[in-house]
Image (cartoon, rainbow, N blue to C red; front, side, top):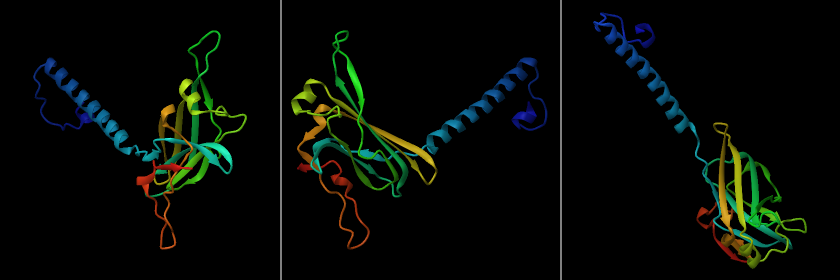
Amino acid sequence: METLATVGYGHMYPATLYGHIVVTAEIVVGMFGTAVMTGLIFVRFSRPTARLLFSRVLCLTTYNGQPALMLRVANERRQPMVNAEFRLGLIRHEPTLEDPTLFCFHNLTLQFSHLILFPAAVTVRHLIDERSPLHGVTPESIESEGFRFMASVECVDKTIQVPVRNEQLYGWQDVRFGERFVEIYGDESDGPRRVDYGRLHDTEKA
């Protein structure tokens, strides 16, 4: 036990069997306690923070002449992320004869769902056509059917090669009809292109 715990060799001060048992238990508990605390601290501080931001609202307007649902995702890190995967889902009330309270899930197809390199900010779009669950949607219908949206992004921090992920939930009241996101990229003619993260959530009339 002394060799395992590195408590040092010397006189066996516990004078009874009970004393030896107590000291042995203290050594074992102390060793396991140190190992557990080391693991917890390592896991806590080795996990990278996501620092991936979603816009607070969704915009439903036209893109290149076609209706589209849009959201904006930003990367607050100083370096770009790699292998970014974007997903957007819809939950809405679809009652059936057996269950009038049923809510159904739909995966919304994105204009692009994968980026090799994730820059400062991108606008993710779901183009609405006849096959889209959002075809013919109106402000009244999304409220009456209790629309909810789920967005997620997962990418890899190329510095430590660890995946990071973040999610965002939206309600029907977060959809802005006839609005679009304002431009947040500045002019690059006078140097490196700048991004105004303070306008990430701002919209304007389309």
